[in-house]
Amino acid sequence: MPKSILITGASSGIGKATALFFAEKGWNVIATMRNIRDAEDLAPVKNILILPLDVTEMESIENAFTIGTEKFGKIDVLLNNAGYAQYGIFESLSDKQIRNQFEVNVFGTINVTKSVLPIFRTQGEGMIINVTSGSGRFSVPLMSLYNASKFALEGFSESLAYELASQNITVKIIEPGSTASNFHHTLEESTVSHSAYNDYIQHLNSRMDIVRKNTSASSSVPDDIAATIFEAATDGTQTLRYVSGKDIQPIIDMRTSSSEEEYMRFMRNIFS
Image (cartoon, rainbow, N blue to C red; front, side, top):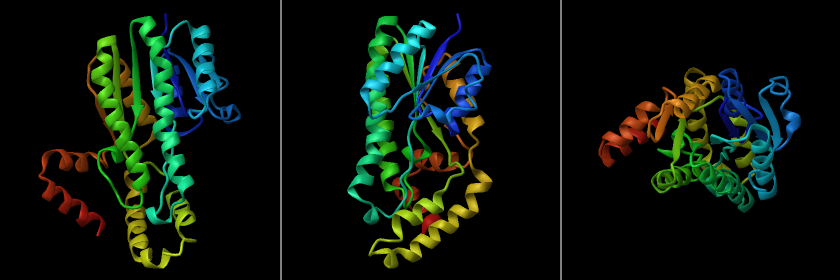
């Protein structure tokens, strides 16, 4: 019997690439997203079931699990992928922007995870894979909220990995590197109208220059990240973290193998 995976945020990027990758490997895929009209590329694939799911709405989460299990009989893996990055100088961000970042990235993942646990316990097994980021292991300027949300997911996931082992439920973390994005547009949109903009403009320009130089050359490709997720789901190990992105591995190595002083000097040299 083919295995099944439920993926949140499957309308684009990593989620979409992962849905197609698993389907090509013969898995049944429950591809969920807020707006199913965004799923045109997935609709023709016969072993992909497209369902609406908003990670901030418990009713839609529970409906997706109910319909998915009725369709495929079992859910073997949950991939918590839905999320977004809020860029900007912290001082410039509104209370709404701050809360929305955590409602989706942190509480959304918690909502979906809590809903799947009774299913996995009844089955006697299951796997939860949480997509965090290199930004869950180290911080960078102008992404304080995103960093905070991903650091929270790292701690949440590691704790669950110990706790859920008692229920034969495995937890794994995927840490993608940087991906091509509309960084510059969203950064300017969230910052330029703030009264403190002129005080930060030199730092903003410097940071944006760094991103321009590095993003296109070293960005992670969604298909490569999908392959890493498939490895995590099928390698049969208790490995917790999987790094997917050559651009972030040197920073993670520095973070884990150097003294705090050496690490901070290394990072300040990049961003000063």
